[in-house]
Amino acid sequence: MKAEDSLFDKLSLVLFKDAPEASQELSLHEEDIRRRWMATFSKWHDAPHTPTKEMVKFLTTGCGGITEPVSEPQAYRDIAYVQRLLGNVQQASKAWCRYMVVEMARQAYVKAEAKGDAKSMALAANTIGKYTRLDKEESEPVDWGRMTPPSFEPSDDVTLVEGVQPVENIEEYRRKMRSLFKGKIEDVQPISVRHE
Image (cartoon, rainbow, N blue to C red; front, side, top):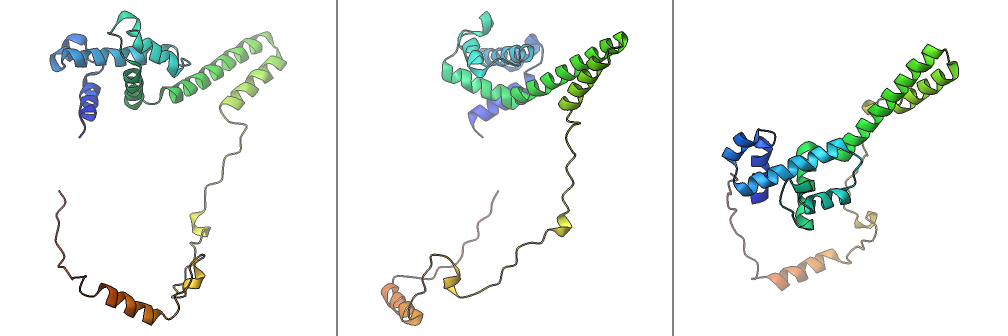
């Protein structure tokens, strides 16, 4: 196991513990890394549209005074670990944005309904349908029983393989190869290897 992986495992277990409790299990350096990861996640959670480049700047300037500034390569490593630990923030932000659009459309529908505005109700319903993918046909499940695997027929005819030329007088060629390597090849006994 790499040192980075063991550090990742260690920090993932204490990431959201209270600072006094986490500091009992971590060195000062590890505690600083934990604070960087928590600050990075919190910033991305509050503003999911924040680009990675801005997050790198956030880390290299000390997370707004919360931690010590880090180098740019370290900032990219921290971002990769945060994404690995907490899931891909971009995917989460896309789901969150979809939820927000649907929620706003639902609220618009309720207001339009209260006013009796049929056109606005239809627009809101259309938006909800679009962002919940109700306007798409559900795909048919694949009928695996109807799929037949390819049929292969064994053959010793090398001309069936594209780009391979047959060897003329194969037995003569084999004899030449045997005489060329005679005495240079020795049989060995197999060795049993146990994998642990």
